Image (cartoon, rainbow, N blue to C red; front, side):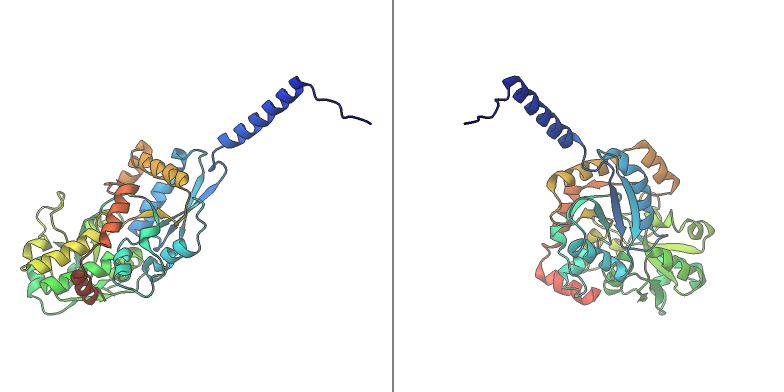
Length: 343
């Protein structure tokens, strides 16, 4: 009977060593090497969400092991609801698709907006670049040059809006309900870039926008005096504009103050979220969270942001996740009241 030849022990050892080396080398190759990350922005080009994303995309890849390319894609529609639904229902949870939407949509989910098909509590959060400070800017053609003028006016000013869930819509509505300001929100624009064009043509009288965006994408209108900042829709004044009145100071009742604080909080620390689809592997979430915060400190990124007049006041993924989850802990009485105001 024939018997097989025995493989010498030294040969077996060499073979096992080769296998171990191949497996080890493969395991050490970064997942993101040679890959492209899509950054889905739910609003139109020309606005603050788009501008922040393009500056981030230029620098973040070098902080990710493997140095992937990051490309920005604008997926507009329904004030970023389409992009949010896409991230929840369609995007592959492989760490290669990042979303950026209006943070106010999380409140709209709580209020039962039927267009929303996502659960904001299940996304994996990366961070925010800034915690916005919202203002009301009006055209000088309205003749309204101060908060007092506006309060005395009986004619509603038309403010351009994007969608319920965006600060362009929600903040003016809560100001109308709590302060009695004459406001008509004209909604449906695909971002503050298109609102700016409508403002320039006289189609709308103004906008509720972040000071961060006014200084960058609305810089020409601000510096020329075409837009007059008449009110800070905030609890505290921004240090750069201390002489502009603060809405919170004029609220008369405790309920009005609570309602206002809820909306401002939603559109402040969680208003510019970067996130991943549910189910993204935890190790890739951690890689992108670290890369994101490293980008926020990168000298080239900071220089780019300064050149684009973008404010930086970042928060990390854990902080953003906490802020989003706190939105869903609102008392039912406040939820009902806000549902009526923001409908």
